[in-house]
Amino acid sequence: MSNKPHIIGKKCTLCDRKFGFDEIELTCPHCGETGILDVEYDYDYIRPLFPVYRTGSPRRDLFRFAPLLPLALDGPRPQTAVGPTPMVHAVRLGRHVGIPGTWIKDDGRLPTASFKDRASAIAVARAKELGINLIAAASTGNAAASLAGLCAPEGITAVIFVPKAAPPAKIAQLLTFGAQVFLVDGTYDDAFALSLKAADRFGWYLRSTAINPLLAEGKKTGVLEALEELGYDNPPDFVFVSVGDGCIAAGLAKGIMDLHALGAIPYKPRLVGVQAVNSRVIYEAWKAGTETVTPMPPSTRADSISVAFPRDAVKALRGIRATNGLMVTVEDEAIFEAGRLMGTYAGVFAEPAAATAFAGVLALKAEGTIQPHHRCLVFSTGSGLKDVAGASMAAGSARLVTGLADLEKIFAPGS
Ligand SMILES: Cc1ncc(COP(=O)(O)O)c(C=O)c1O
Ligand SMILES: [Zn+2]
Image (cartoon, rainbow, N blue to C red; front, side, top):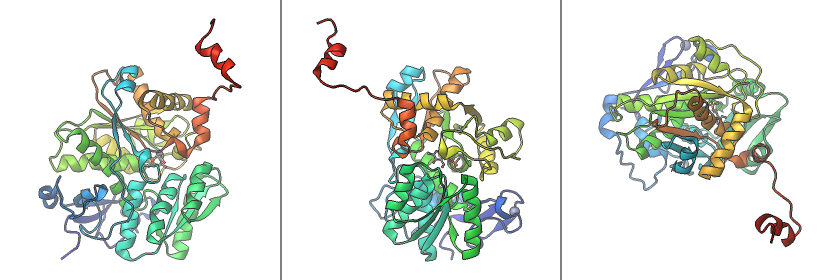
């Protein structure tokens, strides 16, 4: 008997060909690197195991959702516990912007300070299942830092390709975690292309986004966890997430669809994908009603979502449409403003790509799509500590004082 009785197999999103789960690790051999696979589950098998699956472990991390994950139910797990993260009912922020039902899922507080830990946990677990001791990845920085951090305690080698302009904090994380780091003289898209060539040449297992179909499955745990916390019978109206390659959006949509297929939620919250206006390839396809993307050179200060050729566009677009969701774009200045508001009114420190999701809430509120009674769940996907220069650009600089006399002028003027 299969050690994954809850899984049917993998299906190509382009040609619909079906494969056994263990037959292929990455993309469809007929469609090449754009033939992204999707994991299909046996919901009838899973229904009695959900939502309470007894793992026999006191850990509350994402593996308590094992029946909805693409791994053996009782297989090896990474040592690092990933999740749960805080769900902040951002009362003061919500009141300030006129949407009292604003919740922030602060995934900047995962072990390596970004949402990507959810996917890396699955990649590392799969490597342990297969007995693999090297994982390679291209990344704008967070996915790589996450992979390196989760590989370190396992003794698995992480080989990393990041653009040379990645924020220093992300590179410092990578080096500290002992990864083999290659700064690619080019963009994220160049780093991605090199990771594909190198994996092909050296036979490596790849954790580069989208092409490894298990990653979106890990990302869906964000929504499983958040909706569990809100109460499965009481989902929000909207779920906001920023979009670069589209893999997080694809994963969150999958989580919503899984919960709905299991009958765990009464309706599907609408997923909103938010892109920076100058990195909006998936948005353009959404607006045109197609699944065909036209690459466009990006230019946004939100480095994690600066992508010319998004790798998970088809899954993301289908997922957003399947939840009756929508997409919106925001200017960099609106991203900075959103980050300031999240910090000032909710105490959440978000990197620019993470603040982008909340900027989307503000944009849809301004155009009237979001009304004051709507309940909005916002994913904050990376910590502000990841990009201190970006945070400083948003927050401005502090005042210099030389002594009490300066404070007198501020706190006791005219005395
Ligand atoms: C902090 C942060 N937010 C959002 C994203 C976008 O995720 P995706 O590329 O899957 O759309 C990333 C990806 O690197 C990220 O690091
Ligand atoms: Zn195919």
